[in-house]
Length: 184
Image (cartoon, rainbow, N blue to C red; front, side):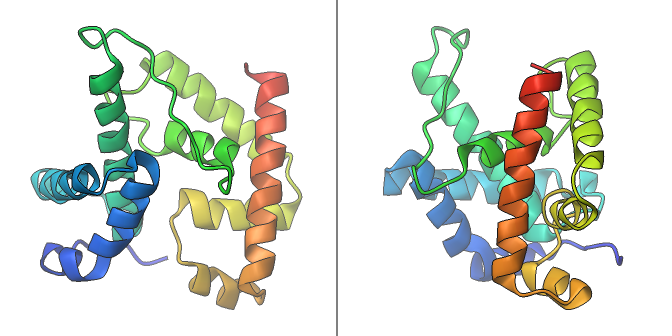
């Protein structure tokens, strides 16, 4: 798989609407969502040197935006930054899958749990992924971990987008069941 490259000059045209819709779906305030998207682009520019090219550009920006949303909730819900934050999810979304992806999106983040817990979680996730049916494991890894586009995965595996999303949903459900039994 070819490494991805950043093209900041195209971010606003390519990703602003997508990022805004993502943010407003979690914040429910258009002005704050716009601010978070701007902060995401700024943070992306500042940390562009750290981009390794292993994830698609949009996936990398979404990971940054997720941190901005979490930071926003921490700020408004904290007592000098010490409160635990529980984010609400839309009933249309697979909250378990989103939670899992947020936990593994950036294992090097200083905002996440300590290194030992991140390593333990990573090992538990890998163990649970290895227990999935082979095609589910492959689709989940390609989409969620490698950040590949739906179209590319469908072409490579000869499946349609509906099949892909069903497999991802089943993989997420199975992973959360596995993690609940074996890690939590």
